[in-house]
Image 1 (tube, rainbow, N blue to C red):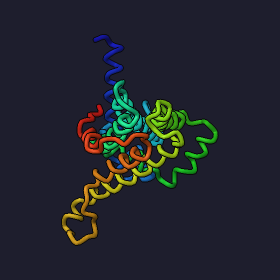
Image 2: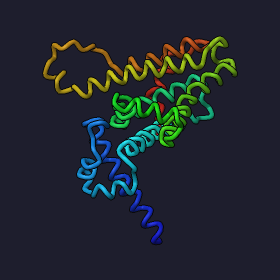
Image 3: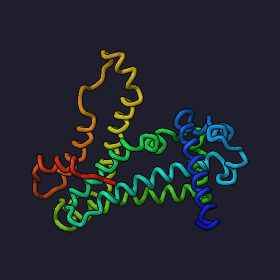
Image 4: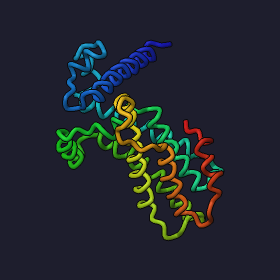
Length: 245
């Protein structure tokens, strides 16, 4: 390995160390209440070393957000990229990938969905409006790509006659993601408060499989789209067979 390659690898390892430490603190304390000093202490580096790679904690938070979103997009795109899939099965693959993303990356899910500090919102909106923050532009671009996966799948189903022609692809996508996020946040709440719920069995908790509820949201939506009813048992089995990367 040459000197340049070794230095690049060391840089990547250092960035990974910093972002891992920052992620832990952001999840514990939130962006507003985390400092660069605390991140430096957590990863056992000097604060000056952090500034070699990141301008500030917001820059660091954005890097984690981008990595989380790229991970989600890659999982979804890989899962859906099967030439023999129907449009309905491609939607199922996308839904399964999102559920797998949450299960395998709960920290990323929380960063993406729970840790937007209200104190930061006004400044973030200003940067978006001014177009000054390249990180925000990149985050928006990945969001658009994630959004497009479902929209394009629904439109493809309409074009090939699999889905009803009066379908609104944007409405379907919004409904799926709103329902999915709601159910996964319930899952996350139960996971976070598992000890309390276990010690207080009388606490009112629905005795259902939250994962089954998630699957039914996707299946009920697909049922409303298809021109020809599908074999419900066979299609439900696909949720077990689909293996997103």
